[in-house]
Amino acid sequence: MISTAYPLPFTFDVAVDNPWDGRHSVDLLVRCVSPVDASRATALAAFLQPFWLLASAGGLAGIAVEPWVSQPVKPATAVMPDAVRFSFAPVLFDERATSCVLALLLAAHDEIALRAVRLAPAGTRVRSIAFDPKLENPYPGIWPKLPFPYEIEDSESETRVLRVQFASTLDSARASTAEGLLRAWGHAAEWGAFGLAPVPPRSSACLSSEPIEHYEAELTWAIEKCRFHSAALDSLVSVCATVHESVARIAELTVE
View (cartoon, rainbow, N blue to C red):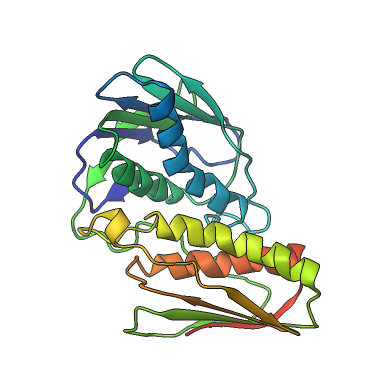
């Protein structure tokens, strides 16, 4: 059951059962206060793009499925007089991925006033997301059987450093593919997908623009001004699991 530590300025109804169970297409209907023109529809799509890019990279698989299996595609978009509908093909990942949608829509609300949101397969029962100010774990965790050792170190620093040691030397092509997957995570984290309530999502994000450095079998990435929920780093490790399976084998991983 999904709840949020954010008090919502718009209604948010979600399917009673996990909408991301891989069995049904999922509709995300976003209703706005003002009429929706082309510019508003484009802006809403831009706020939600980090969600499906991160999901495609395996960063929202959580405990539901192996990260490299969870790879949805870009949603179809339909514009209505007062709303935009984003339709996803059946996909499987953690139910708590809905919290990332919520955080991104909260960020969007600062620019495009929203009235109501519905996230569910067509024809299914929905309920309003409950407010729980004591909620500690709103976002997806980590698949319990990752194929490489990893450590997320405790740190009070706002700069976190990802260090990935691969089993063999990476050529430039594979390093570029790995970077593309990691940048999908960075884009989502920077847009506020892992907001830390009660701080607004865009203020509890990060700066992910630093270069991802690659030398032989090692990849290093410094991520600055990290003010997001700690689950963002769980998601980063999940994306690295996709790198492991689809790009190059990882020997070990550390987030400092």
